[in-house]
Amino acid sequence: MPKTLRKLIGVVLIIALVLIYALVATTVAAATLGAAHWGIHLLYFLFTGLLWILPAMAIIKWMERPDRPKA
Image (cartoon, rainbow, N blue to C red; front, side):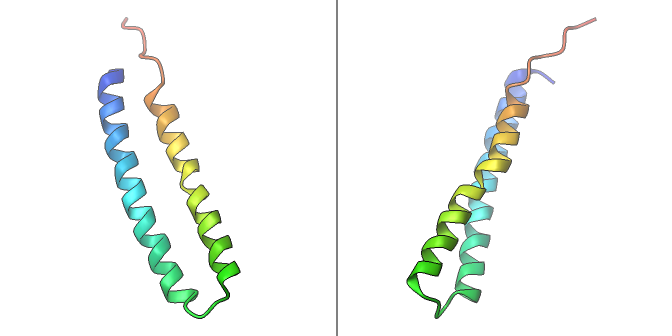
């Protein structure tokens, strides 16, 4: 697969990841942290706000792989 196609697919995947992740993280927070202390909210959103970086890094690593030499 050419690098340009991987980059296009990767950008679409990262956008989808961020949108879906934000919706899920917010839904889980609303369902479970309703009456929790503000510090718990802060820790939850700090943790979930950084957690999406791990799958995004994997997608970026895949996007930046060099093309295989043609035989």
